[in-house]
Amino acid sequence: MHQDIKEILYTQSDIASRVEELGKRITADYKDCIDSGERLVAVCLLRGAALFMADIVRHIELPIEFDFMVVSSYGDSATSSGTIRIQKDLSCDIEGANVLIIEDVIDSGFTLSYLCKNLLSRNPSSIAIASLLRKDVEGQADVDCKYVGFECPNEFIVGYGLDFAQRYRNLPYIGTLKPEVYTNE
Ligand code: PRP
Image 1 (cartoon, helix red, strand yellow):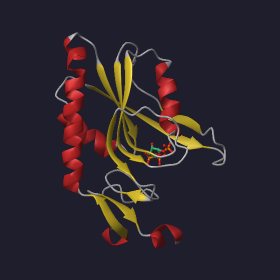
Image 2 (image 1 turned 120 degrees about the vertical axis):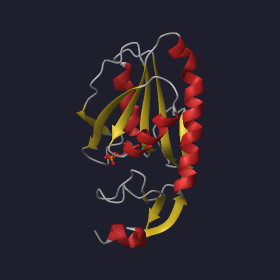
Image 3 (image 1 turned 30 degrees about the horizontal axis):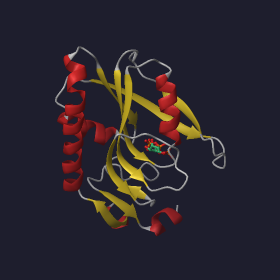
């Protein structure tokens, strides 16, 4: 796997420090909600955010519920509206809860733009997003992401949950892929 990486953008230790910082901010931001008896539900978007979820929740020092969704975009990639399908929905009811969406990367922004609208219709008390990465993409949908790990270039990146053709998710760092890897597929 390592030989397919062009450049490491964020090392294992960069990621660990940033995730810890975000977890501490989230702890401070939600302390009052929890103290007043409200629920905090972390919603992990599988599969890419699995590692980020596993790490960040261990830095959120509050009672927190876990839930998981699988969403995928489909249809004509030329369609600017982007269409998202829910393949696995939440198991819990989020009405009245504070929802924290845990995502690995915001690219076009369509996934989160759609998902926020969808989850808002279920009447949560609040929705916020924590995304490890936000790509610098022209025309990205307007997504209000409160917790961003790293603003990153619009390149083909893999590792720490992010894949290319379902590979490289288990790399402990995030790096760019050598172009010959994806052009030869
Ligand atoms: C990736 C990523 C985000 C989404 C971002 O998911 O994990 O969920 O795309 O793209 P967008 O901002 O353009 O909507 P993918 O569908 O590749 O699934 P995965 O999480 O299983 O890797």
